[in-house]
Image (cartoon, rainbow, N blue to C red; front, side, top):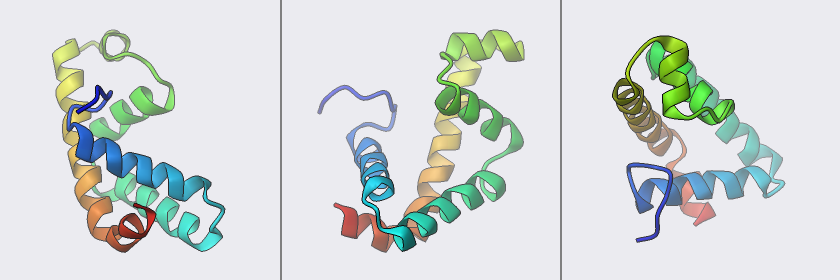
Length: 105
């Protein structure tokens, strides 16, 4: 198993790679469905704190230490928050986009 940025390991990284391939494949309908599922999951399935931390981590590509300093919490708290938010998103997206993932693999 290769090194990934994700703590969940190869399976999670493979899912994210499939999402990325689907987003760049040019299939407007699949792209829209996946985007809608991700936005809905971010709004409804993660806590506000998880959403904030995930957006800082992935959207602004801040390190966990930088996020911790910005939010006034320990790096380990940020790590746990990212991990829990990723798990929630993964469960939601697996359920909502299972057929799309299978087709992208």
